[in-house]
Image 1 (cartoon, rainbow, N blue to C red):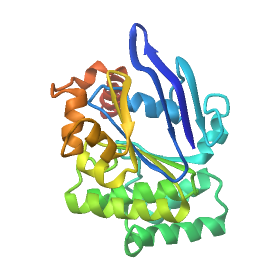
Image 2: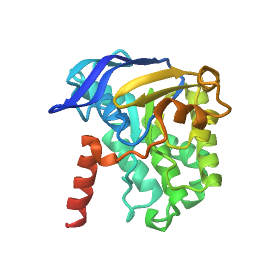
Image 3: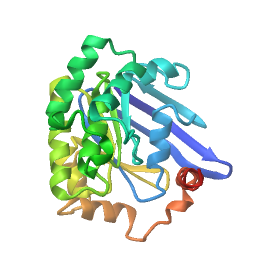
Length: 263
């Protein structure tokens, strides 16, 4: 479903992603892990057509997202770290707008909205403004919305950041249900190693732009003689705190936030 070959992304003299290759089969939950500035977000931006690779190739469901951008976008859903809901609209209206943008037929749009809001335990709040929702409810709505147009792939960039353990557990229960029921491939990033260990079928770890290992959580723990995925992660990437600002993609996010706050 996802095939990446010798992927490189450079910003001037800095190489953020350096000769990365991996495959994610249909229906798999794949966790892409790494320290701040390791190249995770840059990779996701290339996979989702927001950045063009310097070299290498990407296939999403058999499509080249660089040359078949619009067709590729129809095949995936995405939830970024930063919120993207309209707080003045209701949950149902946020779903409706997404469905219209993806040209989901009206009847199917209503059916999928009801199914997903019920699955993510938001149906009783469907006509409430989103600004009245808790952080966990907003995150569940964003992910429900990402599934609305029946994507083949769902990209989740730090989807549970800042959520309490109960909300994180609830969210992943819902995601796994859709993953299994609709055979949706899920590509996620997270800093919660216990989450990746519990949820992901396979894991890839990137550091300094290079993919240092990939395999099942059990395989990676065995490879590093570790008792937990967090211990394995630290052995593979070190324990030094990274400066996220070293990653140009992170710098762009910070500039966007700064300009956004001045409007």
